[in-house]
Structure formats: structure tokens, C-alpha cells
Length: 249
Ligand code: PGA
Image (tube, rainbow, N blue to C red; front, side, top):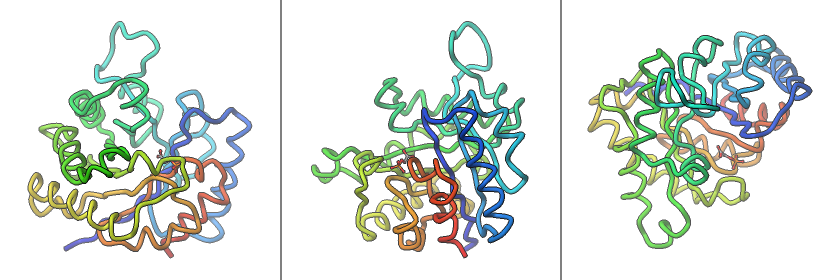
């Protein structure tokens, strides 16, 4: 079985103005000096994508945090996948729990967005994860596997799909699941991917996200079927983001 090359992805969320591009510059330097044994991605807000692409060197990919499911049209304030591709983005995050909550996005819409991303030639990072209530109710596995099944478009391929498992209660809280819990959920997601894509489902990256920081990254990244991280808060500073990248050395 081929283990996919890990991906450490930063999600800046609604943070960052031009001055923060210095963090990408700093990240370039840290990687140039110390290397990176994984793919590295930064997803800044839309307003910084163009400048981020100019600043990032070729070891740092730039992606977006969301897009519309349609390719163009009367959707005031929205951004289409083709616009992101035109800028030079390589990945688009879809279905982040903050989108699912703040904008009532359900898996059917997430699947349509992922389809738009993939048909544009970009890679969709599809986010899934249970709430605290769902975990406490013993429903984590059915909730997460159903989200994975329903959020992956029918004609997705193993090459244009990344899954990010992010327990909602672990995002931005400093709390993380136990290593055994992470292993259990990632194994269940892997099983869905293999059912869906056959053997190549083993090559799809499954990221863990939720309070990843330099101090816990090594342990989390060593769990079977964890092929990288989706990082929020700790991605805003080059030093802490690079500390997570160093979990792969
Ligand atoms: P966090 O966010 O690392 O700040 O917990 C993770 C995410 O929402 O992707």
C-alpha cells in the first residue's frame, strides 16, 4: 500500500491583511533552511490570494477557503473555482465546519462545491467532523462516514480529493481527541474511501484538524491513516506553522 505524501495545510480563516504576508516570506526562509518533508499549503482570505502567490516560493502552495458551486453568474459576493484557478490556486477547502454552521452548508452543497473545484482542475479539501453532542451520543463514526459519503461528488477521483477530519469541538479550543479516537475515525474514513475508490482510496490524504500545534503535531501525525494536518490558529505565524511541518522530518 502506498502511503500518500503528507500535506500540512494552513487555514487563515478571516485573518490577515497585507502586513501578514511577511509570515509567508518567513515560511519560505524556514523551509529553505530546514526543508519540508511534506507538501505545504497556505489558504489565506480571498483578498490576499494574489499577493500570497507572488510572495510564496514554489515549495508553498496557495489555496482558498471556499468557493461557489456555480462557475459564474449572479451570485453577489461569491467567488467561483475558475477565478481561484485563474489566480494560481491549487486547492480549495470546502465544507469547513464554520461554513456548515455560519452559512448552513450541508453535505449536498459541499459535494456540489467540491465538484466545481474538481471540474476546474483543482483539488478539493473536503472537511467533515462531529459536534461534541454527536460524540457524546456515541454517533461519531456514523456522522463522519455519512458526511464523507455525501460530500464527495459522484465523479471525484483519488487525485483531486483530500479529506480533512476536524472534530467541531476541537477547532480553536485547544482540545484534541485521544490518539485512539483519531485512529478510529481515520480508519473508518479510509474504509469509506476504499469502498468508493478501490485500491486508490488508500492514496487519498486524510488530514486531521482541530487544535494542531507544534507540541502535539508529531504524535497526531504519527497515527495510522493521518496524512497531514489542517491547521487554523497555529498557521498564522510562520514559526508555529513550521513547527508543525517539522513533525515530518
Ligand atoms: P484550529 O482550526 O487549528 O485553530 O483549531 C482548525 C481548522 O478549523 O481548520
